[in-house]
Image 1 (cartoon, rainbow, N blue to C red):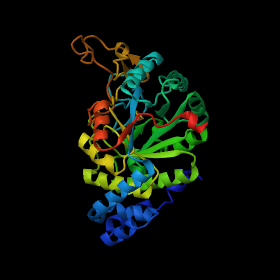
Image 2 (image 1 turned 90 degrees about the vertical axis):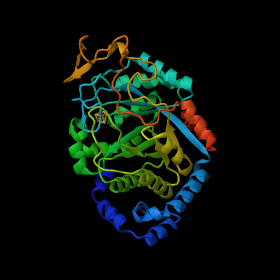
Image 3 (image 1 turned 180 degrees about the vertical axis):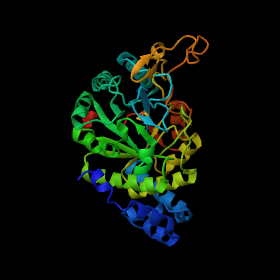
Amino acid sequence: MSFAAEFDSLPLRALASRSFGASVATARESLEQSTLSLHDFAHLISPAAVELLEPMSRRAQQLTRQRFGKVIRLFAPLYLSNECINNCKYCGFSRDNAILRVTLSVEEVRREAQALLDQGFRNILLVAGEHPKFVSNDYLRQCIAALHEHVPSVSLEVGPMETADYQPLVAAGADGLVVYQETYDRNVYAEMHTAGPKRNFNWRLETPERAYAAGFRRLGISPLYGLADWRYEALSVAAHAQYLLRNCWKAYVTISLTRLRPCAGEFQPLTHIGDRDLVQLMCAFRLMFPDVGLVLSTRETPKMRNGLIPLGITMLSAGSHTEPGGYTGAGRDHLHQTQRGRIVAIESSSEWAPTPEHPTLATEQFHIADERSPHEVAEQIRRLGYEPVWKDWDMALTS
Ligand code: SF4
């Protein structure tokens, strides 16, 4: 049975209410369990469990050191294209946003990857909006093949596909797939996704399973905190991770802690998850899933990222650009706008037109909060007593 088929029968709303009503004593009992159930997880993310944040952090730290050692894996996103056929209210790349768009050529992608290799990265996440015309499967396959020889670990965060369409991408050298459900609340999901194939909630929810069937061996999932109640989202993604660990057992599962950031369109978060909530949530994830990778991006501030490193984070992005061409300026000479799938040139009189004084790049997906260079992030990781690791996977290990 797929996770989508199981999802609606899970008591996630009841667990979210249970979380609100939990007492400190119940949360303490859950903290003492060696294996946690979803009920225990609900208690650990409860308002009452805030009082237990110290013992929770200690235990999360211990578990992480036991299972992962004192290492933090670094990766960088490489945006291939900001074309998209979907309208997602919270995303700057939405098709109705009049932004500067571009799809990098394979040669430009190679240059961007070289810039990341020069900074030390060996683990690259290729990101693109969903647009079959500009971001075809064959284009993705060519990009992966171009990078495969020099980049040991290539993951994808692109529009969901059928298993058969994923297979050539795995064969070309991609090993990981990241797909955020954005929100596990069906009503909010319908409200946020107003046009395009992304409107299909179940199709997206089943994506990690199709990716696994195609041969991907690293699966990343997450909601985007800020759209629905964070406790409900956390319980849902925990249930999703449980399902993947049971059914896609050869895969290494990661959960991201992703909060909404400002973007083109200036969408404001609908719900709030505070810094302390995020710390509590991260500790609860670690206690529930001792072996799952926990990922934090440059959406979070340096202070928050530094603070979470010793508690259980295992992967960090660094020095990120969220626009295609952000690392080298690639694509600058073929920027355009896109209307109804058609490229529209930018008039020189347009407010968008680049000038020698303002050589514009494509529009970014969101503004990052940690602008430190990868080198500075690596130094900070060392200062905290951890080892930054640039390469965390090798296809040779799985063959
Ligand atoms: S979130 Fe993804 S699918 Fe939605 S508009 Fe942005 S790039 Fe497109």
